[in-house]
Length: 311
Image 1 (spheres, rainbow, N blue to C red):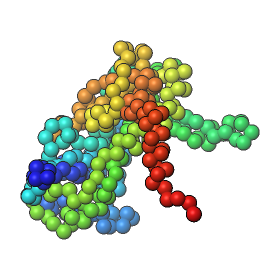
Image 2: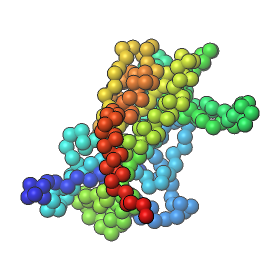
Image 3: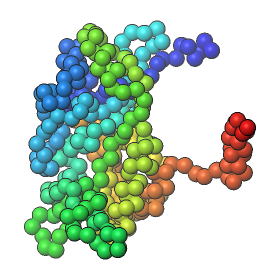
Image 4: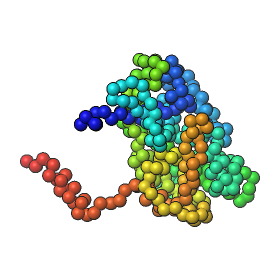
C-alpha cells in the first residue's frame, strides 16, 4: 500500500489551447482564456484558429472551449508543479479535427500518396447517400442523408481523379473542461497547474462508435468505384487500435491510414502510412476478440444471480 501511495499522479489536461501549447502559456494567459468561457457565445470574441488552412477555404472561427489537444501530466503525490509524462504517453492527443489542418500538410501528403498530386483541390461535404421514399424510390439528390466529409481532387483533369478523406479526432470521457477553466480563473500562478479533473481520450467511442460506421457505410461503394479512402488519425489514436494486417501496395488497399505525430517545435508531422482492406480495418477498430460461449454464459449467470428475486 505504501508503494502505491508514493506513485506519481497522472491526469489528462489541456495540451494546446487556441492553437498554443499549454505549457508555454503564462498564468495570465491561461486565466484570460478561462475568462472567455464565462462569456455568452453571442458576445464571446472570436479567437482565430492557426491550424485551419487556405486549402480548405475555411475562414478561421472560434471553437467552443478552444481546446485543440489533450496530453498526460504528472506530479508527485506530495503535490507541486505538474510536468509532462515522458515518452509516448506524453504525446498530444487530438480532440479537435481542425488541428489536423495545420499548413495543409495532410492534404499534400494524402494527395501525393493516393493521387500522385501534392496540391489537390479540396471540396467538403459531398452528398453520398440519398434518402429513399417509403416506396423504395430515391428522392431528390438534394435530400442527402450522408456526406463524404472531404474529397481530394487532381486539378484540371477529366475524367475526375479523386479520393475520399475522413479525419478522426478523439472524444474524451470524464470530467468536463469547465473544471479546468474554473481552476485557472481562481489561480493565475506562473507554475504549470496539474489538471483538476479526471478524464481520458475515449478511443472506444471514437473508433467503433464513430469511425467504423463511417467506413462501413462509405468504403464498399468507394471500392466498387475503384476509389480509395484516406483516414487521418494521430499516433496515439492509431496505437489504440488492435494490430491489423497490412497490404503490400496502395493498389490493393481500401483504406490508407495517414498517421501523424506532433513535434514541440514543428507541430504536425507525417509519421507513417498504413494500408489495409476494410475488413482488416474493422478488426483493428473493434480491438477485441469474442469470449467463448462458456465464458459468456458464466457472465450471464453471474448477472442473473445479482438480480433481486421477483415477488
